[in-house]
Length: 419
Ligand code: UDP
Image 1 (cartoon, protein in one colour):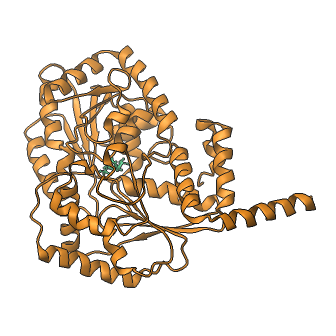
Image 2: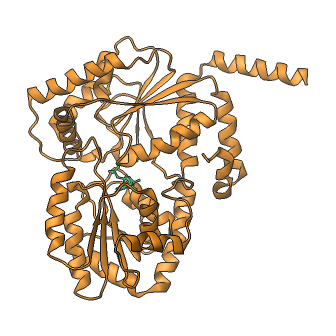
């Protein structure tokens, strides 16, 4: 059964739910649309999966459209992705042509006439605005990447599109762009505590799922769940694990699926497999399986997130929510979530990482204490109800005119008088 908004009361209380419902009533005649480039793989798809359903259940018509793209289009947009995260990429006139041609084709397939607001996610569909010059509604660019180190050439190309938007939303303050002269709003991402990936499952069921993958239940488990992407640094995780193994017996699980809009995945994956083959007790899992992610994040002694860049890091949120301490780098949004010595450890190198893994594996009490703090930190700050309210607030700000408010108030008054 799909969850309803009232089902979230158990996590955030009645007042929060009432606030969401009140705002949703005000927006019930609105129609919004989200555009991104994949239905699965990565945090954006993860959030939309829950958000779009919840918004529709609240009575706000919310569509989710996908960008259609060729391999060469996604090769170019991965260059944008890498460039925005600070890599020096070779980016040619031909690349620009490929990007714009594909977006022009897409703009002929998607019409936004009836929508009150358009949310465009990440760089892949960003340039669509160029082909919607007579747009009828506000357009918001929702950036999810760690863009504060952006490569100048890539950003200057993309900024020409971004500046045509009516607003931009980023996950944290340091991503706001000084040279982008449009309103910019901060909305951190969130997880859905009732999704398959995050709902409470029993220990025995979790253990059953894990052992089906050939993972022993008698040795501590260290896990990283992430797409096979160089920014997630899975090869570095293997190095950390080597150092852990020099001190204690443990197993490493690297779970990662491939996103259809990420052409680099298979290359990174085969490098990881080559390294892992040289070692004992490294398990690599590529199944797309939300329950298995849930089980691993719940049952691992430690979850690692060894990212070099990280927009926010929903995998960190997910693990903390399950009461599992996280040992992670300081990339992007991770320090908003991992509070040193409270919910996990922030590390600068592989030695610090392995030392923390060993310490946590050996100390049940420490793990338990951090786990309690971790779940509470996520409950307070990073559950979907908070992001849902923020989104409704943006829709309200951008689409409700004073005239709308007056009409609504008059209707409400009439309703009260009839009663
Ligand atoms: N994910 C998954 N299976 C995998 C790898 C990742 O379901 O094998 C999910 C993960 O649970 C999380 C999302 O993909 O919900 C990744 O989001 P995050 O913000 O951590 O990173 P992104 O991939 O967006 O850079």
